[in-house]
Image 1: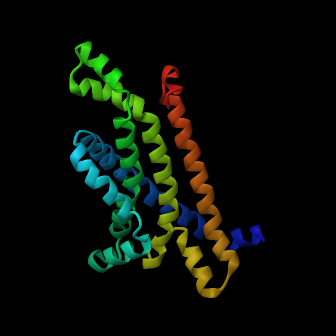
Image 2: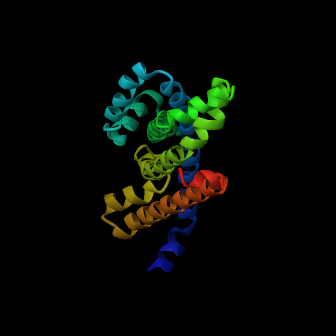
Length: 212
């Protein structure tokens, strides 16, 4: 069954996986940069964060299908439509975890850093971000896994990815096609999650690993 499927759809599967990965990498990269910046800003503005963080939770409840559909009306059938939607959804877990990680850094450690003569920027980059790295990477892992599943929706507006197998399978009542799109998506999510965890362990100093 698998051999027959690969013989028939092998080229299409490879192309779909590459398109899917492209959506994920671009969207998560954009989401990560924006989320890290906003997370730092919100950690410095507690009054604003009390409003923004709950709003993010509300926005996350909007189905991706609806959001991509709305963007499709305004932006048309372009990769930009998918990347915009996925980038916005991708930044939420990273933003919340970046904010949480920074504000939960022990105040005594920050006071000690100030006592050593560190500036606010030095405290941010040498104390807060390193100690918040575990939370940030957890957000990055969640964001990546979610984005792999959300990217399936790209096929809804004819922009490829593994969702193309899923939607074709649903239209033709072909379970093989549905599994042919869903299974690689699940594998991609697990592999990318493992890679992120591995990178996190590699770049985290041993002295901080117990704090992550």
